[in-house]
Image: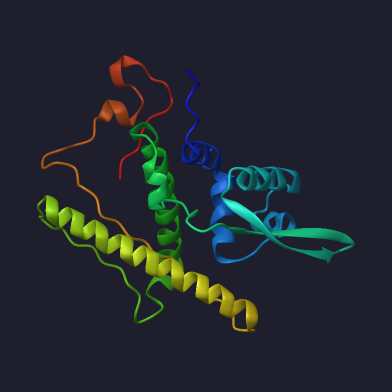
Length: 216
């Protein structure tokens, strides 16, 4: 009996999120084409490291080469994220339960970092039509499915808008406006739940392993 083929999404997830620099690279090429040299300057990281992680992201299908150009006597290769490859996309939630925490952690960590930076810099309220809200709901199974469908439709529409904007910007001299869009619908912790102090400091079961979990 042949061994089952590994799940491509699983492998992509593990490899793409296996290093924080890859997450940062993937975030940048969601909004613009970039070469390893440009990424090196933007991320203040060694070119060799950046080039390696770009190759990993390309090999596992998260990014693709879209252009080449001669710069400073060398040929630059430019990359962009492939559709449905952004951190937290629902496709990535099809992985086994044991890997979903990795997806969620990367999604929330990146989002919270961007939100905190925007709050501190003042840009988060710089526009009158900034959207920032959340609401508690009580739903039945049918309502849960309806909410999920709304989010899926919204995500598809946002992806289409993003693709159209990139095409328009590529053809014009208009400066791109950076925008972070976050969507979430999840079951909250039960009433009365509190984090385990032992788990938080890594001493659960009396063993400190230095890998304490944080809660938000």
